[in-house]
Length: 248
Image (cartoon, rainbow, N blue to C red; front, side, top):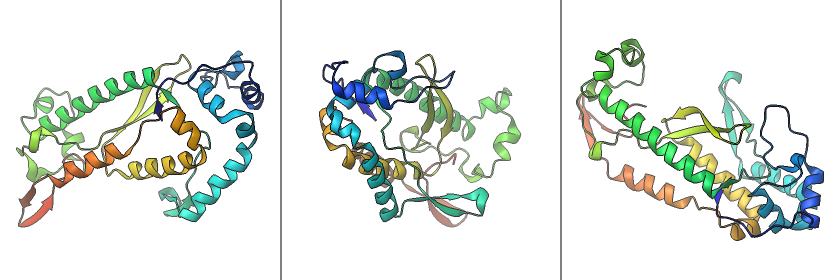
């Protein structure tokens, strides 16, 4: 959850000591997100634990139990397709993943760049197919993909936007940077999980979410709904379909 800079933090405060006492050793090759093992809490965790206070840190066990109950009561599950589609309870960490504003600015620029590139590639695949002609994309990878919609060859969507959802899986590296592990442009089920996660965790840490000025999610959902509502219907093979993601 991206957030604004937090309040000044006293490393000798009881909250800081309580947080560092509870921290586990970090395996080699992994980033110490908290910074507790290196002798001092990293921002923005310092601000988070300051708002939480020593009493709040001591109550994390009860908060974890409350989170598990809420997931169960809300019926939040996911399907394991390798296990014949069996539904399992949604796994959620109690502590939110905090992203400092300066980190988020770097991530945002990178994601926009990658999304623009992905959209340009889809536009080329359904347009002049220059990437295929030059051998930069294997033809079999495109034409053999079950999601490739041959009737839409030559189609131009409004504003040239073929992809309306572009997500990236990120990893925080041991050096403190960020790297992209995967891209996703399919049906946006992940947005539903992100919203459910936010509703649950924000209800457990209301003071921290308010004091740290965490960025809100509704704007993204409103933009998605508005975008899809403006898409035209496309007639193909006698049927009317709604174009949501030509490359999906």
